[in-house]
Length: 118
Image 1 (tube, rainbow, N blue to C red):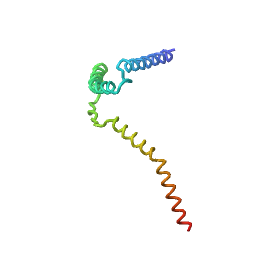
Image 2: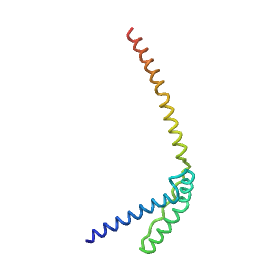
Image 3: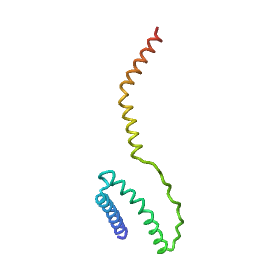
């Protein structure tokens, strides 16, 4: 019976976390305009690290464990939106010229074969 209770508790905890995430996404309008999502990301980058540090300190005090200090995560100056757009533009431009290039290559191939046969 103990394993059933533990399984039920795990299910309830996971369901609560999933429900909280869905509510948070809806409440913060993260699936809406990109500007709101970007603002929420910047807010999370400012709030989450101190919260994790405070929680780890609390766990250390309560359990007596010593957690080593981790180095700060590196800062990346990389905008995924810009690189995504440039990648899409490159792929679409390659696809748009593909029929023309295929015709050119076919013509060149026939010319090469005609020269080799003579």
